[in-house]
Image (cartoon, rainbow, N blue to C red; front, side, top):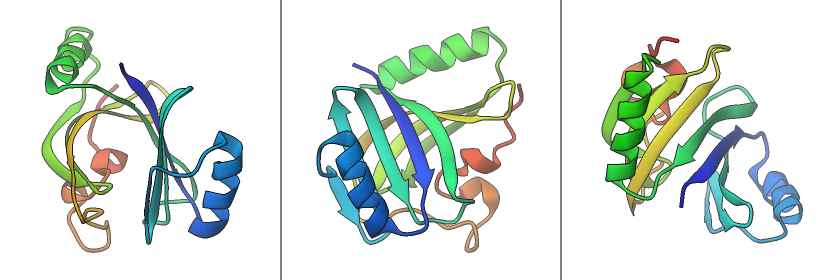
Amino acid sequence: MKKVHIHISVEDLNKSISFYTAQLDTKPTKVEKDYAQWLLDDPAINFAISTRGYAKGVNHLGILYESDETLLQAQERFESASLGGRVERDATCCYKRSNKYWLKDPNGIIWENYHSMEDIELFGKDAKDQEAEDVCCSGINTTCTT
């Protein structure tokens, strides 16, 4: 099963956790000092919030794939449609190790297509500390074409 992914940058993590716990009618699956995540089956969504580095509001959207094989099939579909995009393998981001394929829609909205392999203890690299292409959720700064 694929899950829609929504990542929102928030000002106050605790207030936002309270709000989204009520909105989604369940507690987060994962909580860190700067991040919270809800993995839901109904609706099928991977919803995340964080206080990390970007303007407040929708950070990016995405699709969580169940395997690297299904992610590769999607990547091949995107490339066949000449959508542009950028591969990111073995990324350390959002307390996960993942393979990713970033796209920008015709309106400039970033889409993260990914498969996560394992939980890790680090969020990833902040924009203020690293080069843009080496930053967690770097699809925000991607050179994807439309």
